[in-house]
Length: 196
Image 1: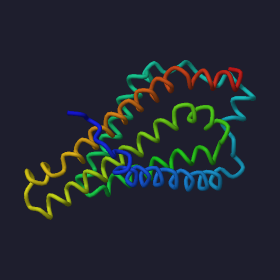
Image 2: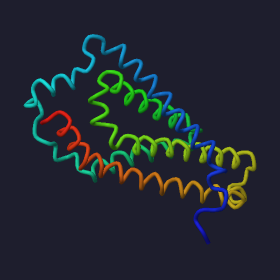
Image 3: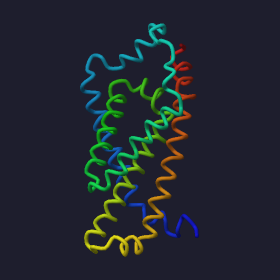
C-alpha cells in the first residue's frame, strides 16, 4: 500500500493553488494597509536598530524551535479542523495571518525581510497547505451529507483521505523546518544585517 497515489499533484493542484492565492492576496492587502497605516513611522524598527543597537534585549528563552513548531502546528491544525465547519473559520484565520504578515512588510520592509523572510516563506506555505486540507475535509463532509452514509463515502474516497494525510505530513515537515530556521538562523540574519 503506497501513501502517495498516482496523480496526487493533479488532484490537489486546485485546492493548494487556492490556499496559496488566499494567503498571497491577503499578504498583499496587508502590505498595502501596513504601508498606509505606518505613514511617517515607516521603517521605524529598522531605523531604531540601525541608530541604537542596544535596544535589543536578551534573547527570549521561550522562543525555542520546539515552541515555535508547536505554536505554528497548533494554528495550522485549527485551520485544518475548520474544514469540518465548511472551511469558513479556516479561510478567516488564513486571511488574518496573511494581512498581519503583510502589514509588517508594508510598515517596515527591511525588518520584515530580515526577521520573517528566512522562515516565513516555508511557514506560510505550510499555512496554505493547511487551508488546502480544510477544503478537502469540507469536500468530504459535503459528500457524506449528500450520500447520507459515512462508511460508504469514506470507502469511496480512500484516495482523498490518503491525499489529506500526505498534505498533513508535508505541512508538519515544513513547519519543523521553518521552526528550526526561525529559532536558529533568523536571529543571526537580523544580527548580521543590523550589526548588532
